[in-house]
Length: 156
Figure 1 (cartoon, helix red, strand yellow):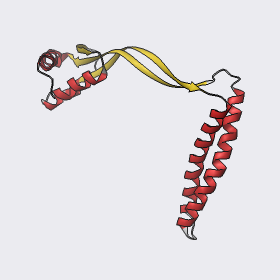
Figure 2 (cartoon, helix red, strand yellow; figure 1 turned 135 degrees about the vertical axis):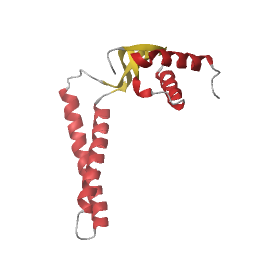
Figure 3 (tube, rainbow, N blue to C red; figure 1 turned 120 degrees about the horizontal axis):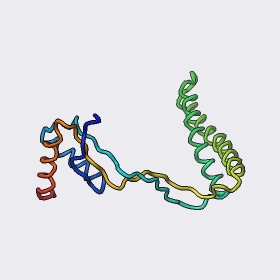
Figure 4 (tube, rainbow, N blue to C red; figure 1 turned 180 degrees about the vertical axis):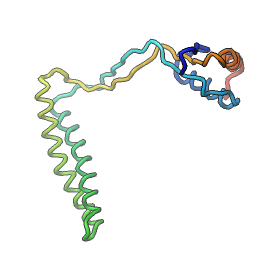
C-alpha cells in the first residue's frame, strides 16, 4: 500500500471490513488500491488447561506417533518388495517407535522447563478495529461506495 493512502472506513471486526471490500469487488471497484489494516493490536492468550507430566507424555506420544507413521509409510512405499504391505507394517512400527520417542522427549522437555510453564494455551493477535485504507486517487470514490453499502439494507 502506498504511503499516501487514507482510512475510508472502520469496522469493529474483520468480517465487516472483508464484506465491504468484497462488495466493492462485486461492483467492479478497483480493489487493488485498498488494504485492510488491524489497528491497536494486542496479544491474547487463551489458557486451555493445566499441563503436567501426564499431558506432556500424551502430547509427546501423539506427535511422535504421527511423525513415525508418516516416515514409516513413506519408507514402505519405496520398498521394492510388496510396497503396500511394507508401507502398512512400517507405518505401524513408526507409530510405536515414534510414539515412544515422542513420549520420552515430551517428558524430558517438561522436566527441563522447571515448572515455568505448567499450562497449555492458544495465542492469537486481536485488533481493536479494522480500517479499510484506499490509495489517495481512489479514496473519495471508495469512501462514497462504502457509505452506500452501510446505508443499504443488509443481505439475508
